[in-house]
Length: 505
Image 1: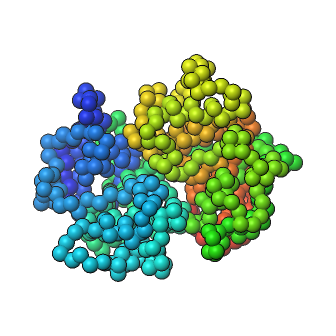
Image 2 (image 1 turned 90 degrees about the horizontal axis):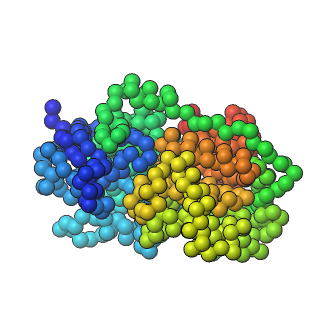
């Protein structure tokens, strides 16, 4: 049988250490017009394997060796530049913030004899990935897009030069259930219509089962071909922990939002008369489709944006009255931007030690004293162990970490502050189920010990069901439904909620 890609005995090594291969004994085959899944735990090497196919692994100082690497009729050293196209897993950090979407397409275009603008082609690509009135998007900047919109822009860019193979690295991890289905259905459609092969790198076994023809598991540094029965067995064992035993004090309001509206300049408001309360000891879920205003609301709560109208109070005190440091000691956030939230020039240990400087009881200590205090180092080490991270990660820089490892460090960074409230903004979108359960265990321990209050913003509705006692549904900038999670998900009253749950089921 002739394969589009055929790899025999590939090994990947760190450039400075040939004694410890990152991946080894990699044997892989990909048929034309097929969709294959690459699954595995966070940090197992899924993204590294995806990089290796298109030689992007050199960015990470990795050396590749193989007995044979063939792509269709090409040898490895003569593959056309557009044979592979890669969709990264973090849209907010993968788009250039200072240029428009139109300019992204212009820069991404492979030069040919036609130097004129291809705006109509760009519009067609944006329509293909599900945008309505795409011509209005071309002059926008990335910061004006939701995470889901940015992800679809990246997919359109990946399709622009008509590749043979599309490597989708957690390409739907930032999308809600409705848009996730739209994109995955789209990948199936274009695979058939274009004769395009798709490599789906994912931690979601449900996606692998429903959309992929063949499956590979990265485990113990190697690639294992799985049968459908073996994948089904893995899926049957994959369940979220149920977070119960909440001690909620309904008499104490921690965070209150009243009649909140927000928009940029004179443009149409993104948030419209938002009202909600979070009580002490509560874990409140906030769900909604991509573009509904979840991230904008988060930025208002973190004092990044100021409301046009309405008030936000923490412990009955207006957010405007808090200094940045006093506010940070009370409320922390775990953003969904894995790359932009960690300083690329600082080691992980230095990033984590900053959290101690914010803690109320440690404000008088210098960073030098904290770094030399064995108790604080032991606290960091304890959390690392519970999160399944090795201590050697403390001396590494963010760029050498996988997406899942970055996610864990961001969560650990917030936990070390020991705040009264933590806002989790899509905190587990890049984590496999095992890692998600590890995070839930950490949150459970922190909650039981400190009675922390949590606002949990996510598009993973199964996760909301396992952890949140109450849920709100945001649609077009307005809270359209709220109540006990079990009641809202069992008997929704709003059409937006029903649409979401129909896809999830």
